[in-house]
Each structure stands twice: as C-alpha cells, then as structure tokens.
Image (cartoon, rainbow, N blue to C red; front, side, top):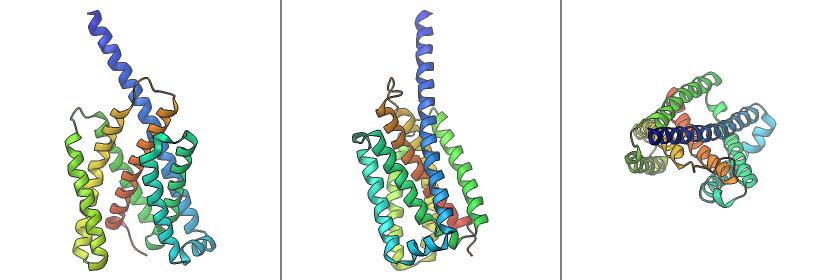
Length: 234
C-alpha cells in the first residue's frame, strides 16, 4: 500500500515538473512569435524602412542565409551556449523572421493573414495538446515525417525551376499534413526530454529554448502553408 502510494506521488511529481517545463517552452515560443509578428507589422507599415530592407534585391537573400545560419547554430549549439547567448540568438532569429515576413503584408490582405493566424493557432494548439496528453508513443511518426519534410524541401527547390501549379498545391497540402504531425510529435518529444531535477538551472532554460525553437518552426511553417491556401492576395 505504502509502495503504491509512493509510486503515485513520484508519478505526480514527474507530471508536475513536465507541466512546468512545457509552460516555459510555450512562453519562450510565444515570445518568439510575438517578436516576429510585431517586427513584420512594423516593417510592413514603415515604408522608409521597408524600402531600405526590401528595395535591395540582395537583402532578402542575406536575410534568408542569416536565418538559416542562426537556426542551425542555435539548434546544434544551444547547450554549449550561455543562457544569455541562447536567448539572444533565439530572439534575433525571431526578429529576422519578422523582417522577412513583412513582405506577407504586401502580398496578402491583413484580414486573411489574421484569419490564417487564428486557424494556425487553433490547429497547432489542438495537435500540441494531443501530443502532450496522448499515451500513444509517437516515435514511429518521426522517420516518416522527416522523410516527408525532406521531400517537400526538394520538391520546392525543383518547382522553383518548373513553376508547376499542380506541384505547388501538392507541396502545400502535404506540408500542412507534415507540420500538423510534427507539432504533435515534437510536443511529445520535448515533454519527455525534460531532465527531472533540473528545474531552475541554466540547462533547464536552454532546454526550454531549444524546445521553443522547434515548436516555433512548426508553427510558422504551418502558418505559411495555410496562408498559401487561405490567403487573399492583394
């Protein structure tokens, strides 16, 4: 009886610590999305800055290369960084993404961007909740989703040259399915990577930032795919 009670208490403690860890992950993710949204809106509505940033054809390429470099650096080196470095790189990446996303306000109406964001938030929330609460092991999804992700990246590069509308829509709908699945898979993986007894340490904070980066990427990529479908072009 006492052994069962101790086991229950232990499981409750684990669940409580996992919950607190995931709250920190979502808080970091929310901060990143907030910076991206504010930056995108500000740049899009400040013609002088927008023209400086996007008027030069080289600048978008520089921004994309910088984003790719930062996201790979943070994903692979976050645990070797200090907390301040990890925080700075994550927020800088979110800001650069916001600058790039400012072009969306030129291409799409503000109303369709807002409605797509709300649909993305609802879909993301539902799948993340599923990934957090399900008792099913989603590990088997990982290889399938990763292969699908590589597939749409290669197909997207090929379609830059082919300019096939059919391939464009196949990539878009496949992308929605892949990032919906990744949201659930990554949430479960992040929940389980929490190191028990690590709460409040620098390592705990860096783990939370790494988890936030993963979910942030799932969210913005799902948003972009849905915007292709739901967005009203100007």
